[in-house]
Length: 285
View 1: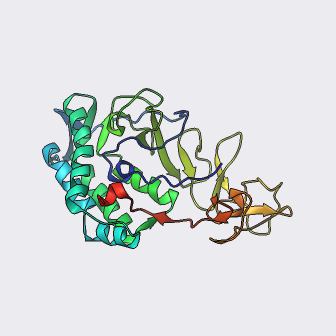
View 2: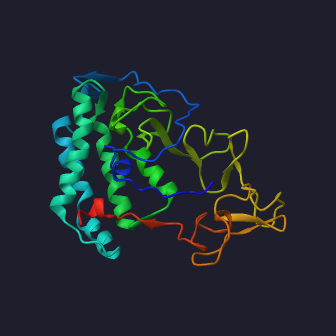
């Protein structure tokens, strides 16, 4: 199971185009329902706040807010560090167009909108572009932070054209995967939580058991393990001579992904655990 960093723009921004999720679209979670203090008015979630009802960012303004957060001087710096030219106008146009698809789904009744969730998503977006690099877990956490903006009516495994059409699944973020089916991604932070089949990765210090598909505390360094492909040592470690050892650092020679601290072996070399978030789509270059 090679861990692939798929930093798709929509996944982080929360508007969500087609992104990589579980290939089979399988899920064991339950479709989340709106809380009792949430009312949907013309597709917009209004949340009761004391005696007042505060809708947050209006639906017709959300795409401009997303573009403001996504195309900043921090974004430009990340693009420059990745040797990609930055075009703010193209960056903003991309985000307006992608977000616009989500707004269309809301107006067509294929999704609900919660303007109160925009602030959390914007903070997550700014955070990831302050770092310029992200691990797979970082990307999934940011996706979850943005997932509350749009909640579609299409269930996991059913056909989709855009992530905003997909229903929320527990604590995971809905995505429309490369097979054009609704799926989910997220991070399980505690032992005993379900993993793999519901789109959840286990957090650092945990591993996903098989065939139980449950997160469990990883075996510490020096602990006993069963063989070269045993994942019980946890992310960034591997089993060597029946004992858990630290994974090989970036640039080291490798013959299999699990030997690397990044769990990624590319062309016989271990890759960096965190990869640049900038790409030509993000940068408008």
